[in-house]
Length: 426
Image (cartoon, rainbow, N blue to C red; front, side):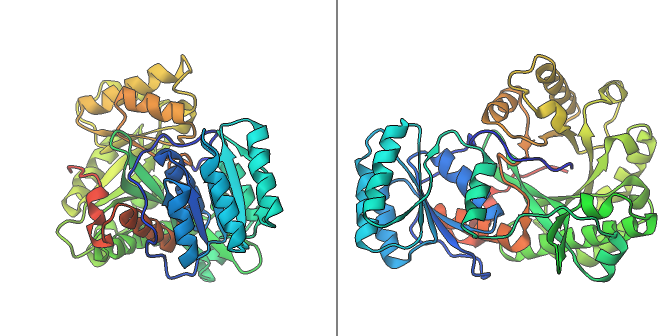
């Protein structure tokens, strides 16, 4: 699935209050405390920060956060200023008395004068106060704050690399983006994206090393992606988390891969394994539905299913078929963008959703960037969503950290986190 840029508003998610100290990933990531009475804001910030390599603990008010700081001081605190600013002021004064040396990022929907007043109190107590942040804010605003403070992972860089070199030097790794059940607001799966961790350039996005790749190199990358997705499923399964992972494979590579043998070798030895999704680009498969049906019949006995990626323009090709060989239709982000307000995109999204449901299939909206679009998709009956609004791609260890943080936030062990995954019938 095509990756998405940063969103333009906060997430419309909800969830329970936080605990004080969830277990963190073993990679020694920096820690951030998030204080806001709105669960949606806390979860939105946590998703963005986790994706950037920063662990989080969420708090519904400053009192709980102040107690936690006494046990462990974070590198950064996002603190909301509510209608009653007394809680934020009390936090700033308390942090000053503790000689807290991390950064403080105030945020609020209130006027600039109130924010400046609280910030001024922090400055008087010699605290590191960041420039005030007005709600709503964009994901890239948060990322800029993290980059300025030099926390978490460095941003991906623009570079041109040869895929053969990346494979031969073992620079390839796979990151995972959360897939959310929109109505229940629960984690339902993940999608794998290839990255290169270059010794000089750092993290490099797929477009920099796949653009002019040879057929042989693309085939090898597809094989690595399939193996990694299965190994990651096995890893999650051992942690008690059963999520269906999606992996992108071009059709020319898929027909040459020994998919069945790879699945037999690497799939989790767990009867609860929900299977694997293989995303096929619309333009490569929609004109050969006979091949899609053949592949579906071939793979389904191994709990491997097909999804039609970047779907929307070829709607008419599927409208008259008797059987849909795809488990999921993934709405192209071009149609998802502004579907809450756009008079063209909104009815198209609804038509695709109805088509999939008529066949007993699912719809995934790609590239969700705005809360208004997420709400519109829920009202249309869309099943799942992905995009920077709901979580950006992150390394496997960061994804595990997110699972741990969410499990602890809800007062559960990670072993019980699998209840968050949506059951998807084959």
